[in-house]
Length: 302
Ligand SMILES: [Zn+2]
Image 1 (cartoon, rainbow, N blue to C red):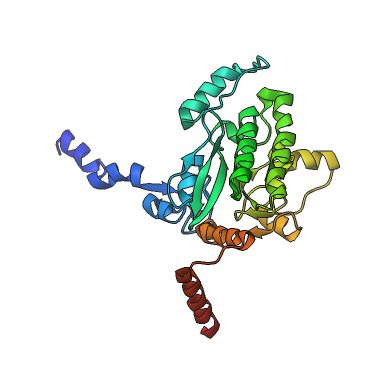
Image 2 (cartoon, rainbow, N blue to C red):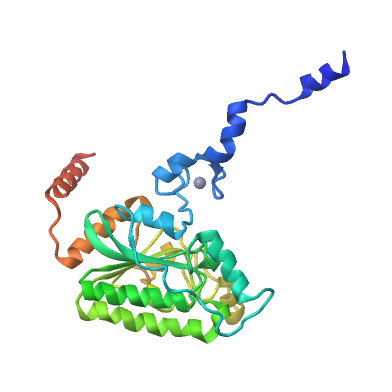
């Protein structure tokens, strides 16, 4: 056998279509390791169709999943500054620049006006892709502005939290945002307007300890890690082993820290129902009929 024929035969047979399509169209779920068709994943609100893992979403994608149409964006005009001249392994402005290039926004927050199944809302969405969704001065300022503007306009606020906590590079300035956001949210409460917080994976640190958990209704996504300090820090401090599932949404629901766990594929519909209920808005006739026929079919099922 000629040498070139030997190598030709041993060369793996490659389907040219599959080779070019695989990197773009298929992805592997990190939890169940199943190959997932990315269009199916997108159509199912980025929840794995095999195991139900709720994939983490950047703020823009989250807004697409949550709202009826693109937001009237409010955030983006306030930019972070390096007030403390912070430098660890690299300078804070260098870190910011990288995060800004990656996400296309000045800081880890997206706010604006939109609608959820026809209900007008103000939304504030934290962007975990920007520096781990850390809460610096800009995040605090944008959330405070969104809350105050929602109160002025008579609209409810829906906040989606995703954060590693306070931003180390802004130190005390970052911690001050906990008080500022909390006070701003009182404007909504004073006007009797609802504030709903959706806790996603992960919501931790100063964000959990302030605006994310003082909502009228606290919703969590299945399996989300929600806590203040990390489990390793707590375990080392109290010197006790922690129960299974500690700091996961399901554990926190059982212990009263969250009000409900809502699958992301159901979120728009459930949030719209909640908002209508809290805003005393009637349910549109078509939706009410669909809901009653669904309820009727559920009742007759064996
Ligand atoms: Zn999966």
